[in-house]
Length: 309
Length: 273
Image 1 (cartoon, each protein chain N blue to C red):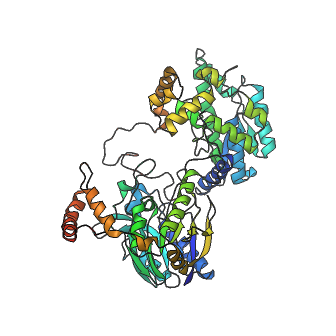
Image 2: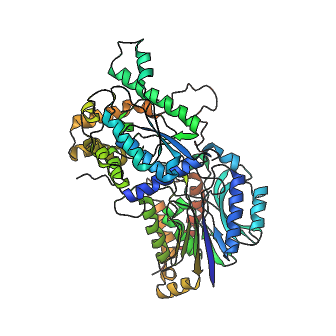
């Protein structure tokens, strides 16, 4: 099956929900006119990125009026939106929400919240605690948000969970300059990453970055669709707004996986066993909660024993 | 050889987008910039003309009686070449009127006063002309504290604040700033014969390489010594950066309440924009 995927590389207004909701609506209409099947918006593009103390002011519960509007918009065109999701116990998540046929089909809460250098996400957001692929009407996919991809384990999990494509909303800031390159250093690293993931995990990487500036920090744009062979099916402008459409032929995943069955050969038990051994190594930092959960898993692993060769 | 990367093609693209974006999101379309005839303000003005259109940039020339005639000539060349709007405001009467009351004031006090008078003129025309004040301080000056607080350091937005002086030279050349302006010796032109490098006691090329390794690449003191920098120079520059930190921050506020501005009342400047 081949679907047409659009990426709305937009420049939202910081903290202005009504303005950004209108922008979503306009882009979805543009997508409908262009005959696309699926659309991606960047990370936190319904709210803007550098929210800081505004986080609780723009947070949305899944039963809010704004989410209802977005659900309605998805009847004509399924899409991934980037917003602040508030849970019933009032935690705020940096979330990628997949809307399809008038419903919220999946919510990915950003797991890796960068809190170093120019970033301070963990000061404002709660951390997501799961990575799950899900079934869209077009096939099984996963959503990961920006920094999540800087941890190869997230894409590994998505691939093993059956994702044929990773939908990746981002708000990636430009930084670092190298002579003779057509883009900044962060953009260059990202492009290496999307291509390497697409090829090593034999899936599509659909990367939706934003553009514009917030307090002098520029977002580099350059959204793209990379196929399992590492080929770019569509590429957006650097440093400016754009709207791109690319063909995502899911059968090319089959072709790639036939030619290079890397995922078939992946030894999950070996990985699990080695991870458990590594987890027990002295001096390793451990989260209290995870340690309790993992104690149960360890018991199970002991019962199973090591994999026979 | 320490090389500071300066990709002028990408830099221009980013800085033009920066000016356009940060100006237009405020609802305005214009900027006001003080033109000294030096490379920093010439480059800022030309980038702004690319971003907003030449008729949306107002360059204000603000010479004092003792300013070098070259400075004004160079500023006029930039105005002619870029086609921006311009205005000449001689600051001599207001400076002299003030210092007639304090005749004993030395060169530094006079220089700082001139920088602050120029700032008030820029902000006055900012209001008159509906244009944001465009800054021209570069990263070298900002790190060394080589600027007048609330004087030339004051602006609404600054395209050059993350570029070292040597990067500014390279970008200015690529952006078509007239060569005599790029090549002349940098000077604050606050008194006759003043040059930045003689006042600072080192060259921009030398200090930029040190700052790049120290600040951008986070090299430690032993690593900097191994890279060939003299210990005295490293320590002098470290101290300058530390002692001028106050110039790069808002004034210190005594914390009383639960939410103090910029401490635990944290919003981006582009709030709602």
